[in-house]
Length: 272
Image (cartoon, rainbow, N blue to C red; front, side, top):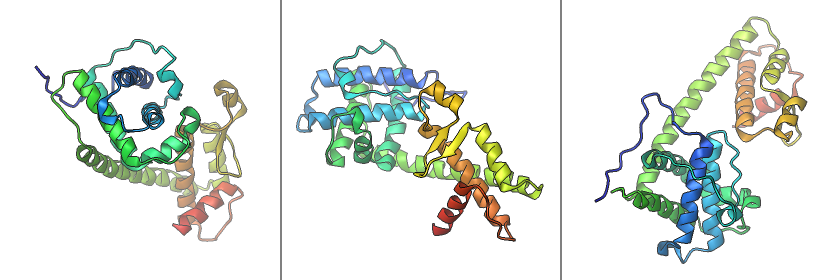
């Protein structure tokens, strides 16, 4: 007898599993899914199927600030830890994040961007990617005897709600950041001093010519790389946009900041 699927909700608003645990669990499901050679997608290229699964799982990790670094070869060679995650929680997390991944991130673009982790080097039909993910979701649902069969229309509805909520959250946070920097400017701090303070707080050493953000030497040594991880870089970028907006709004004397990235962000905003 099938079990009713009810979306997972936490009273604290927190998921009781780490991002890596979620990804390990999804990887084990992906291995079983491949081994059972699901007949619905036998007409889809194996390299595309594997690349989409790996890219989607890595995306889930990145949303939890985890550099999971799953490769397609890991689906066949590496023995993942045997971890357990409440299936209702797992499916809720996966469907919510994958809805946004499918309709905003872009499956084909993401897979090709990360093709050093998979064997897919050519364009493929985005519908094939969507079929793989939807089939994988319903495989997990069926594997756990849930009475739920997910649809593309349902995932798109999730995406629309998420997109609206994210846009409102981004706007609110941007206005709060702008207000913070406006207050500093009103109190007489220079925009360059404000930037230097933010850079120290976020361990930003420099901004490269290509616009990438790089850690300080200490942080670089710890993580083994100079360029910031995407989640850190996004946070720094948001800070710089907010301070540039606050500065430009209050800059009656048309002063030019010494910090080049501030000037670049001001020009970028004027072109929007």
